[in-house]
Length: 477
Image (tube, rainbow, N blue to C red; front, top):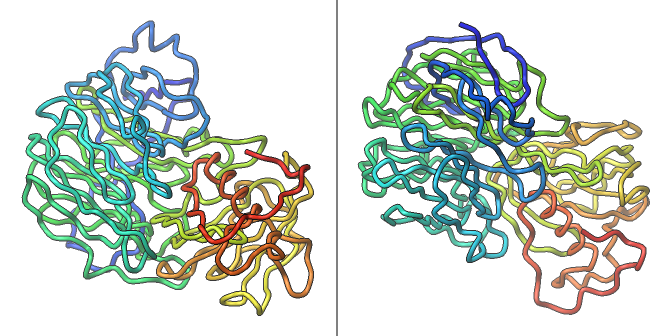
């Protein structure tokens, strides 16, 4: 069968891995599943649609997508009976394409430091539910049935809500948290990964995606390192099992089940899709259509054709991209000299730069990675990534927005990132002279604004004391 990718992308080679096996207790990978089927003839409107970097359609009708601007795209859900699809952005905005828009959390605004993380269709009403990182669930033409509210705090104490999946019959939904816990609302729970997840020194493992099996009513949970665990659903395999238990460093970002119950698909950050029990329709990785620095963020199956939609987070500002785009369970902490986050995963360079430093004993864990930007509005300025991070670069290395500069090495701990002073001993954040130990500096607030503009969750401003001055020549966002 010829695979067609709408939106100006090319024909793809497919790979199917129909494997049945036992439940995998040790979870170490991010996984995403997809449902695929038969292609419907392309319409004149679809053929005339201009290419878009935020949604790609594989054997499914392309109906439009948001522009590649902020806020970042974090979710996609196919409409009932093939009636279009919905695209969710990190600020809670929902765009409808070929489907009815019933509203979004963006209308009321999300609490500071909170982002929308998932969207699921209610097959009974045609509406949808949206979950945010703080555990809030909002129904739009869909009944509210409960939510796992997440208090503020570090990742280890209060894992963020990362995904939502609806029962195929519309009776309710499941909410997944980063520690593998699953909350069941209006439906029966089948277990979770909460007792099984373990932290790794170079690849902290967190739950990232959830998909419901339409045949059994059970579900699958995917982890950041590529494992897929089954609960009341058949185990068809995982990227981690296919790689004989070895994580290749590419995080899993999404998971989707086929509509006929034959299996699931796993999506990775680089646009690669692995198929388990179903036919593959193509991927951004196969077509090499993912823009540099882009991040494949979400996946949804079209119930009519069996094809699927892949959403892409790519929101550049003058060559800069969200350096935290591949980090999971990103929990904002205080803004001080920079911005603190409890998190898990790889951290990219902001843009083209040269690495100037890696370590300083005065910082927690002794890590202070800094690099000097060589382009964009902040050309010549220094950026730092410090604290509980393992460096992946060397001093003098030329990096781009697609280069991983470090990996958070323990998901319970926090990192700090912001503007840095030129290299010195000891190393300092740019706002250290105005920092009193409790306040947010002007440099920290400025860097938080840049991260938010690029699609990341902003930090939390502190109420203690004025932020101090920011040079008039400093770029704003």
